[in-house]
Length: 225
View 1 (tube, rainbow, N blue to C red):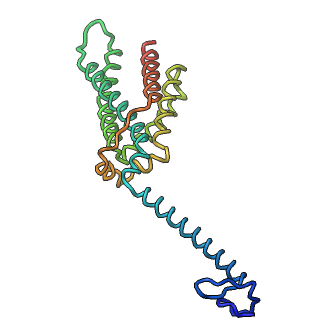
View 2: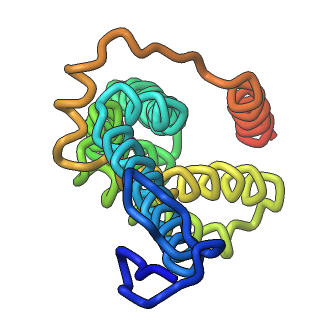
View 3: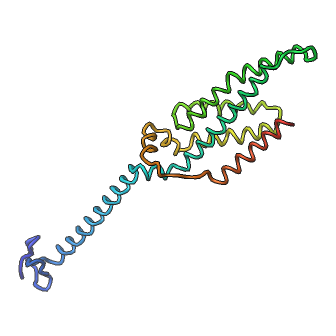
């Protein structure tokens, strides 16, 4: 019998293994192998965690993961700016109409009020859309509040078709604004990430383009009818 180098217990020679010139019993060798395997697993997990953390902090990786959400937000921004410009032009046209002897005074009053409202609210839509295009947090909050208010107003819309189309539009806006990825896109440091990754490009998904086309067509039909 001979003592084990690690535990010092007397052990028969057939249960001893010489490793690096040291006699180690089978029990200690099994424990040593188990500890080595556990250490390898811990080291691998640490390396994977470090690699994942490095990927999360890499500007290009972050941008590639959120580029699709950027395009969704910018599609909403383009819609708001387009509606703001068109509404502003229509409001100015209403205000520029000269009174005549044929048009009833009540209708002239309604035109003036509508033109005044559009003249005030339309620039706000353009301003909000420009803020969304640049991923400003205040624009996200303002858009969300307006979408919620507009969604609630559709409950009193006498036209079912208009209420349906406006509900689809505002539902899409709310989904984009409240998506978890929007939290990162509207983060305070995301502008620096965009500046650091000008090579990251993307295109609007065909499904989103089809949705906007269908929605705008429906809104035009509803407005005409």
